[in-house]
Figure 1 (cartoon, helix red, strand yellow):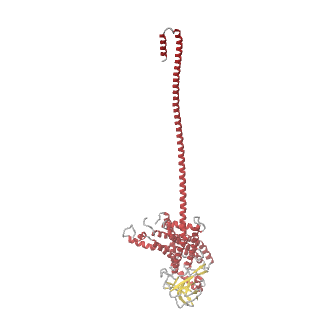
Figure 2 (cartoon, helix red, strand yellow):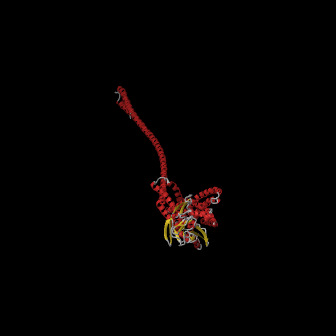
Figure 3 (cartoon, rainbow over the protein chains, first blue to last red):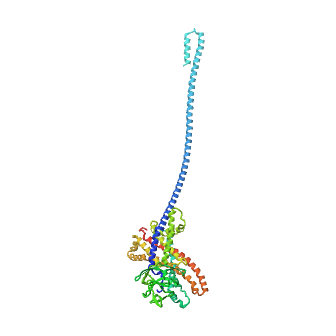
Length: 167
Length: 422
């Protein structure tokens, strides 16, 4: 133990001074250097994290928006197809309806015409009958005039005949 | 402990691996010194009587030990000697404050003057025990110290006017445990180590203050200047040491201590590596590392929560008869943990210094202390690559040891503040 290994001997002065120096160093660094640095780094980390989160959110929103647009587009397309189909249906319906009503109308017109024709025919026939009757009477008159004085019974018989012809 | 990631365990392992061989080396080195004891005395004898022998001898052990020791003078390149303030206290003479320039330190940092019965021997202040010695500024001249073994104890004698005065030992507090002795005075001086600590602390504060100002002044902007190269180291310690061991919600409270420890130790380690600038061996000094370890011990102890103390004194989940045994082991561990912090750091750094000094010493050994020019050249050719290699390793060790000290501190704190739920 004769050899003095000086660095491993506790020295009172060095002990006190290292305590003071390190203590002061610790306190000053905590207050003016490491504390503020650590806090700003923490804050910066948080800011970066927030910014990243925001970017991620924005991206998600964008993709959501995109999906929404896509969806809307598809929906619109479907809507259009639906509308077109509906329109087609309506068109067909209208055409069918029109056709139907035209058919009805035409048949009505035709039947009206037929009825008119019938009545006209009847009227015409009546007219003809009357004319024919008159003519027959005329003829008969002329015929009869020649025989007028023959018999009153004969005239009555002619009139009954005319009645038979024209009911 | 929140060691949920294997990466942190791995980092610890690497750190442990790095610290082991160097510690082993330190052991080896100190063994060698034990063996070389006789050499050391040869050198000391020379200091007293070189004028009789007429030629110099070189003792590498003594030189290495002298260079890694604390000193009351800041010696640069062995000829620029910056005097330091002396603050001495003795029971009979009271407080004494003066500059160590009064000793006129010369060759081997031996003072050529005595002042108030104090003298400087190999850079350290000693006290003349004899009261008949003049209590004033006295010229004692160079080569006036002799070292002799008295009762298995190394005693330095001062030769003054044909008379021998025994000197008190260096002022230490170990009560003879590590070779120090009870002295009649206490040395509270600003020594080389203290001055180095102050310098490193000021440089670090200046650097980090600049960075801190940058963070507040350019808030929300990209880091620049000092910030850019301090930030990666800072965030490394934060993300690999503080947060994994202490936890994201509580690390902010302990970050100043961890960062202070890391950068203070790293700064001192690196400052001690600068050649020719005193090469102060501060973190290789057990007193300094001891103070750091005591602070860590206090922080850990006062941070300890119920869960921590429960695990020490009454370990849950083990049979009752094991509990007292575990309590004993765990209680020892409370003190052994900071003790290992103290020893590991000092051992690694001091061994690095000794290795470098030993390699440089090759020049003088081969050169027969300046007598053989050819030997000196051979020694230099061997010494330069070896020293460069050693310095490169020491550069790694400087970082690794600072990191190990910090990561272990973080793990102790993490264990102390751990909550019950795993």
